[in-house]
Image 1 (cartoon, protein in one colour):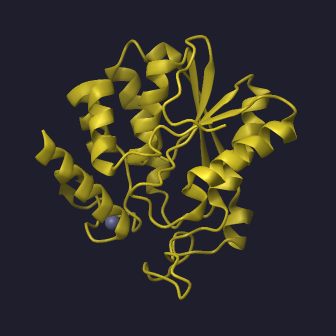
Image 2: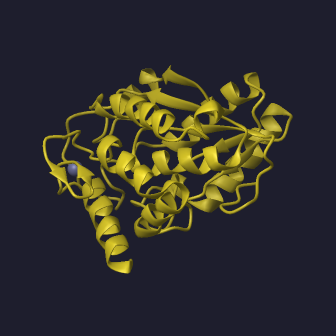
Image 3: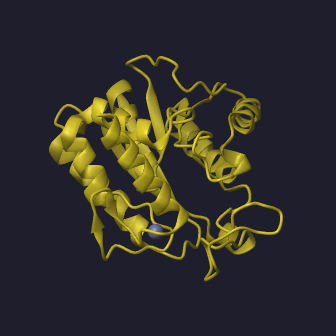
Length: 241
Ligand code: ZN
């Protein structure tokens, strides 16, 4: 079952779904703080922007050089090409389309079943690597209206994966009940100003893939839904300190 705040044993290994964004960078730090061995997986699914593929490597490198206690725990990274799925599940993230809302109320950035696909593919790698824990940055608090970010979706999938693999597989979602401000605070608790700096400088969240302008909360266009959430979270966190 998924459990946002469950404890983890120090001899377990975890596989982090790692896109290079603020949320997954925070999840990577959360996992490195708890697990003896942490590996990362990313997905090439025809995203419009390859910026985040570069960001994920930069975040990993910066974490290794900045946190000597975490460095030995960080294992291999794997990028899985599922661009055929991206072709099927066209959205504003995978093709040139306006970022807004569809007639059914879902954001045009919604990629149908994305998290279900990611977790299923990740579970296959985890099983091969002897890993029993998947870590993902899904969040139902400030979430963007994606039904596959909800706790009940993930509970059902954790059960389906465990049944389908015939072995235990936990899905940890440390951000599930956090606001974006609380996600910044969590990163600060885990790695102080140094980790916040890595997330600001290296992680990438903007839907438009723009890194031209450096805001105090990081790089991005500043007016897509992802940038607006990130900026609001940053402002709220700053105001709460
Ligand atoms: Zn943006």
